[in-house]
Image (cartoon, rainbow, N blue to C red):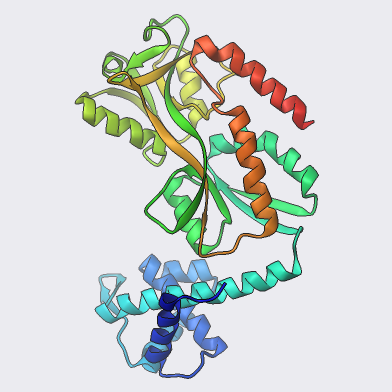
Length: 344
């Protein structure tokens, strides 16, 4: 892909800073060190990420500042804060290093068309509910591709995608970063409780009526929790929160025991629990969030990753939502069983 004017200007700016006609290998190492320190704020954290000693890392930063003739950091307490010049230089470094990394990836794509490592980031419930049954299907089509899974929620996925530590992320849509998206059926907010509890009417409950129950909630890192909290603010209601957990199945177990009402995403499997499931609404509208496969558009996807995205999107349209209100639950279980049988 040819460089556009912004890309060219970024590389020119970096060259002007360094006052060089080319960048030597050692300079690239210093630039990567600088970016790590700038992102993490301390030499010790950057040394852990880069797996080098703190004295060597400090020397690289010192040499870089001397080479540029600029002070890039101010020390504040035990941390480091970018100077105004450092902030500008950081943006130029990210752009230039991104293009350098992209060149390496493009060369690798020329060598390998149907084999390699595919790095996928997803929430735990997505891995359990979707990928556990999809990956055997994908392996039959791309037997020479090793899929490496990483558990990560929305904001953590953004960092993984931008650093190149993941090729694709499966999550609620994030539109504020340079990501391309392949849309999927929406994720929906559901309430789960023991069947003996009178909850909702016709498999639906307004968010305001949940105020009378102890709630079992996912931690704030989950986007479905942030959607629920936003709806709470709009409805102007406060809740009795019994537990906030990072483990969705902990909430389901407690709900089954009659200890509270679990607020869960429709992507989560609940078939192992005896639960009543209802849809949560606000002003008669379901609480839904766009769901998608995303990747950093500045980085080329390997051909086998493109195939993965297309096949996964088709599969998820077949199986989503994983969980539906109790009136539709039998249909959902049969649907999942049919899809899993087709994967064998």
